[in-house]
Picture 1: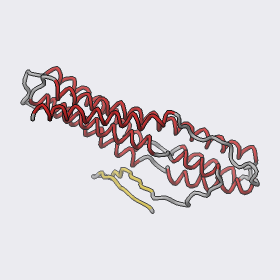
Picture 2 (picture 1 turned 90 degrees about the horizontal axis):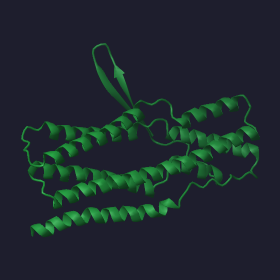
Picture 3 (picture 1 turned 180 degrees about the vertical axis):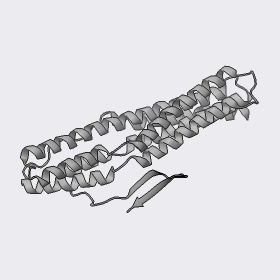
Picture 4 (picture 1 turned 45 degrees about the horizontal axis):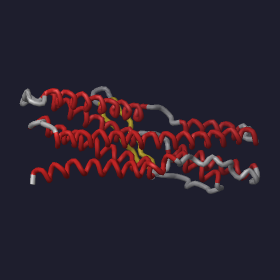
Length: 265
């Protein structure tokens, strides 16, 4: 019975990694469609379509707080898991090297996610907001001619291609993270680790495996907002006027500090 359970613990991570690689394979051939837009449309029509597209993109990407919050929580959980295991006073000498490696890996990976999340939360206006402001200023000055409009079209096209590349890269990072988690679970099931060292390897490997699997599935199976906006503009479609918006900001007073969260629909 114990040997069957150990074999199952080895087989599940390997099957998961095989699934992720099969899912990622079609993404290697994918790239953002940068076909030129319908240039036959009159300038006024394309200009209004650009205004609506940029307005939608700015509203959709007014901040990266939601993604930053998720990464911050994940990073904090990994750092806390590693630190808690390192400071536990019930440690035994058996498996101490594996214990140290697991702690270092957990804190290192958690620090990366934590820093990325804090950066996303604290960053200023997004590129989409800045582009929308530039277009608004140019439109108020009656400077949006064919040349100016072509510049904004080039920006949308280039951003869509860059977003597609980043999305695929994140997907492969997820595959690598899941593979590392599968490796930890496999080592825990087949090695001579004992007690806390084995339990921690199972827990740490499971977190990596789940996080990497979810990230890779999201990256390979979804389409970024930049790609969607460019495709909509190129195909002559009008995006929705408004989308749900979530924002969070620190509020500091003379004798208190708290976080304010707002949502608009």
